[in-house]
Structure formats: structure tokens, C-alpha cells
Image (cartoon, rainbow, N blue to C red; front, side):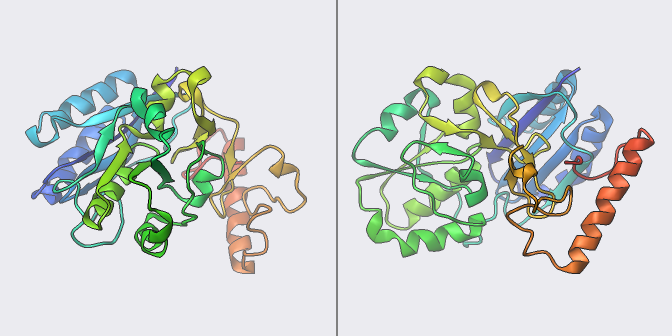
Amino acid sequence: MTYCVAALYHFTRLADYEQLKAPLQDMCELLGVKGTLLLAYEGINGTVAGTDSAIAQLLTFLRADSRLAGLEHKESRSEDMPFYRMKTRLKREIVTMGVEGVDPNDIVGTYVDPKDWNALITDPDVILIDTRNDYEVEIGTFKGALNPDTQSFREFPQWVEDNRENLKKPKVAMFCTGGIRCEKASSFMKQNGFDDVYHLKGGILKYLETQSETESLWEGDCFVFDQRVAVKHGLKESDYDQCYACRYPITKQDKQSPLYVKGVACHRCHDKMSDEQRARFAERQKQIALAKQRGETHIGRKAE
């Protein structure tokens, strides 16, 4: 059995978003769906997994609300259930930028279908920006893309302000994993003096799902926020794992480093861990191993 993984989001006005939490959580639990869904005044965002039937029923339930009728999603497969629980959360923003008044419901850049993306980003008048975090960019990005070198999406607006002189080309194109961050970033750019702004509809996931690998301008793998860690063309699961301590993707070669301690630290974060953190992570790894011996699932991310 494989699981259907659905990444979804939709910007829309949800004035009653607080009242939507309980029925949505109940529906997911009834269907056996797991993952995370975020609700805010500006819309919905999240990634969930379940059987094909369960995901189809959940999407039908969501789209029955006329405000979510246009909700789009991307599907991929996972050999194992990539989440351990279902969480429906209320937030100020469905993707946190931290800048008041930035709302794709009011103003947004031009959506570009994956089939038209290559032509856009090879245009010499276009500057291409990866709106994701540094650890995501490190394992894969589009050829020629600028890396803002951010640790969180909150840092993106300041990066734009600090680099205005380097963003002088007539057109700006942006992309992210599923489309939500670059859509909000495009709204920010439009509100801050950038007129010709484009973003990849459906994000990297839709591009990797629909575009030929032989014609692709994508280089590497794509980080995803679940237990698969990363996917490649065709949305096939990649060989990356993840360090529990710092959350950075790690390769099989990284695990051969003498600085790698399973479940505790890797070559990237070994010198940033306090003794208290090391002890806590080591105990957690011990409990994972004990649960595995008993044939149980430890509630947390999978053991490395």
C-alpha cells in the first residue's frame, strides 16, 4: 500500500476561520488523514496524507465551501505514512512573512504555468529568485536562480530591501515548493515598486510532476516538509534523510562523518548543540530504538 500525499493551499477570505478548525479536524480524523492544516483569515495551507479515497473525500469536503472551490493541490506518493498525527492550527498567516498588509487576495503577481516556465526564466530580461530557505536551496534549485540565503521566510522582505540595486532587471520571476511562498512574495514585490512580477503556479512540485526531465531546468532534488525529506522528477522519493537536531537534509555520505551521531547531531550542527540538547536528543533516539524493538511507532519523526 502507498499513501497519497496532498499539498494544498488557497488564499481567500475566511472571516470565520476559527470556527472551521473543529469540523475540519474531526473530518480528517474520521477519514484517517494525517498531516498539518493551517487556517487563517487569509486562507488555508497544509500537507496531508491518507488513502486515495480519504484524500479525495477531504478535498471534496473542503471545496464544498464556496470560498475554497478554487483550491488547488499537488499529489505525490509515499511508501510509508509520512506523518504521525493530524494537526489543524489557527494562525495569523498561512505562510508567515510578518509584514502587515501583504495579501495575495488584494494584489498578486502573474501566475506562470509549468509548461511556460522554461521560456520565462531563460529570458535575459528576467531575474530569477528562489524564495525558499537556504537548507532547501542547498539540495536543489532552478538553474541560474538567486539564493537569498534566508533561514526563514520572515527574512525575505529585508533581503529584498537590502538588494534592490541588484534586482534591476525589467522582470522578476519567483518560485517555491508548492507555490504559496512565491505567491505571497509576489504580492510583497508588487506593493514595493516591482511592476513586472511572475511566480510559478503550483510551485516546484507541479513542475517536477508535469515537465519532462530531459527538458528540465531544475537541478538537484526538492526538499519537502514531511518524512520523505525530498523528492525528485516525477515526485519520486529521493535518498536524502534529515538530521533531527538541525533539520537539515543529510546524505548517506554525511552519515559516514565521525561528527554524525544518529538522532543527535550531524557535521553541520555538532558544535552548536548544548550538553542538555545532546542528552535530550540521545534519550529520544533511545526511545525510538526501544519502540522499534517492541514493534511500535514512536510519535515523532522517523529514526535516522
